[in-house]
Length: 424
Image 1: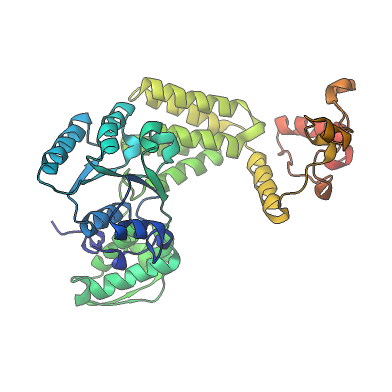
Image 2: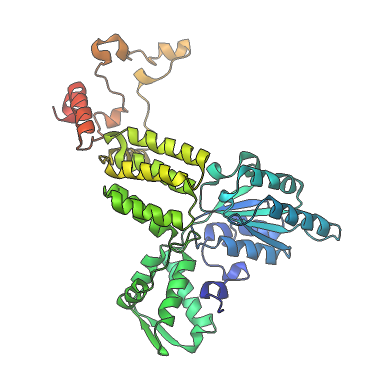
């Protein structure tokens, strides 16, 4: 079996490593730690194909440490204990403590993560975990507190193009061909910042052209890729493409397509909790106050899936996906917070109006803190018109209700309270 291009090009040192200059560039924090020979246990958090596994290998090679690799998909507590015992036995011969690399560490259960604690704490192994999920939610606090978290980013357009250049010039197989890339857009767009995916697509395109002289264009890339649509791959190849299709189908109110993409994810072995988390986000981002019950159902779905497990969890996921797909849609919540955040970044830390400030001391009261504040419940209808925004933003509107029955009622109520702000 031929070795994939991405594996053939895996670099063995930091000087040949593409991307993550904020971590491993000259003078960067992780590079300094590696070069000093003293590294902490760490977790690499980032999307697929950005070099998490490669970086772990480089650390091991540069520090001349034994390297053990486990995948959370097919490893259990027994496998972890076997590696730890091997590491302990090697320590008697004066060897440096090994690197234990755990791919997709977010898939480990609490008991599996607990089994790592003692070895990490005592320095029997240096843990390097890789995850595509936020470790704050997926890694137990006791283990997380013993690790440094490094965030890896999608490769930039320049870095992806550089990676293709290295492949053409240095790969023994590709060097036998005369390859010219005249258009990069399709390759870059299909890769989505994933270096491994880019190389896989590039290799597929090259292998599909039987001649020695190869000219690669956007049209040629799309034609070849569309003829070779891969099955869903939970390890990364179409992981985010299928997730995107599910989310967009729900957003587009198509329950049939939504259930289909859900089925693709389930059949592909996707973590059901990963799916449930995405549904919680969607419930606020795409439905919001048009149907507040959507968020409640999505959150309950996550809890139920966590309690029940597969295969029965597929029914709960299906019910939730259909409910969200058939629900009225609104993106007013995300528009409001994004506009507010943009305003905060533009205007900085504007002063809190005096009448809204807390006044725990006599001095604060004497200089007017809270003096003009009007307690809403003391007024008819539990409302009194007063300005709550900083003076510079007086009467600014961030939240615009969506055009749906629920938010039309909200708009009507806001218009009665705030008059001109909402159309009266």
